[in-house]
Length: 289
Length: 145
Image (cartoon, rainbow over all chains, first blue to last red; front, top):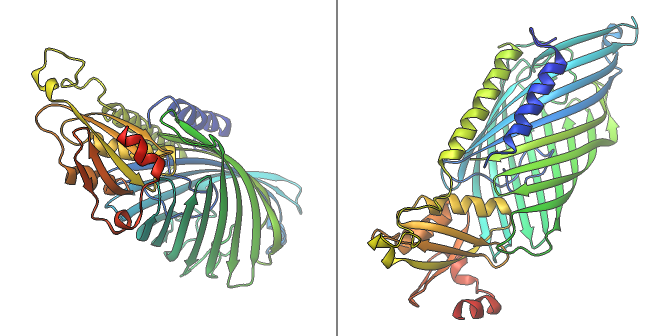
């Protein structure tokens, strides 16, 4: 239960919201699905609302024996990007979790729900090289703050500065994204589940390749485009935990909205202080207005 | 904040998004369009082609349409992503200037190369990228036709 709303009803409400919004005119250009950042941004005075539903399956094998077991999270991740000036944009992100746990020791299951840390970021584009009709290279600096919500156990329970860089290059049907982000952790959760929730600093590194499947060539009749996406997403924490994911996906981008689907699977893990990912499935919609 | 409060916030934000989008649509039925023969301003209709660099996706086309449609006198926009060509139809006496058109393209996040009006007048962008890049020969031919 989430307050007075059962999980199933809540999921239906979100599905209705996302499905209903497909019918309205109202996306982030060629931004990867799982990466934390890209060098793209909405125009000044315009917004991009991104709603993602993530199914995360994890295994906790560290910490107190009474806490160990399987974890299934349904995460509703809402992100609002706002264009401020030609080269400056702001983003605000809030995750909501519905958690099912199967505890190894007691054999019982429990459910919980809560709100994860709120993230506010600013993105400043420092390089823009548009070399032809389609081709572009952009580089942005990003900085922000992870703000605790105090909603244990979903919060990192600290105010953590963020600093990073993102680059996006598009040439014809090919797009490449790379992003680096360092989280300077000032506090932390005693029983972390996700990367960045412990007292250790977190370094995120993402790379993505996008290939435009259809249409092969744009024209005045182009109203949308299908992309195949392959991402590599890494998290390294200064306590030694290190996890690397491979994430294939599909994306459809229309003029005012984008739909995305991805599966994220760990390619390599060395985790001693928090839960290990088994896999994640991500579906999302973005709306531009 | 409880989850159902959060849910209400999401619902409210989507309603706002819908409302905002409905009010910011492309003014295809602009009162000054040539489709209204009784409007004298329609007689002064003109069109311009803006050659733009860096428009790599359908969303880019939307961004540029939104910015250009906000300019006075713009009645219709057609974007050809493949060639980086944006056709701007204008009408009425209060038409956008070249500088306004180029600024709108820059604000949308792209680089204007040049503007070609139907009367043959061409304005080159002063952008560094605009000066260094030369438009594709086939694109040039198409415009001249």
